[in-house]
Length: 125
Ligand SMILES: [Zn+2]
Ligand SMILES: [Zn+2]
Image (cartoon, rainbow, N blue to C red; front, top):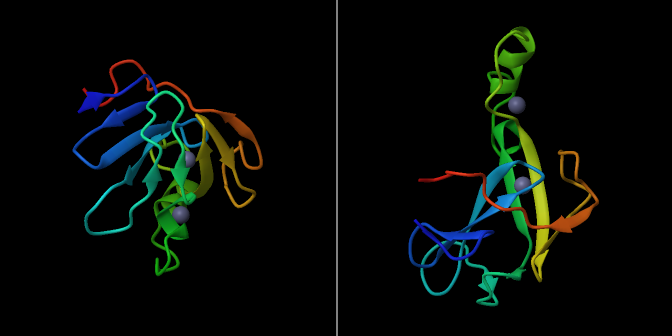
């Protein structure tokens, strides 16, 4: 894992992590040549632009996830348990170091545009 800047990390060639201030978690994209979905990256580690948009679904928002048996159902029944997983949708455009969250996000920053956040101290080490 190499830190390209405070807001971009490269876990492997052709892969990038950025820290999402909406999910408070890292999202990964792939760029360049190779299998799987690929994004365009402007090559700028300080003010990155990715195209097209980045859509991350987790838990029961993943297409094909069966109803019931989700972590969130477990948490709903066990409110005393500490949650380390949230089901959700995060849909964003990263442009010029800013992240624009679209209205279909399930987190609190839906519909807002904010600067990309720095990785937390020690993350991924
Ligand atoms: Zn996110
Ligand atoms: Zn769920």
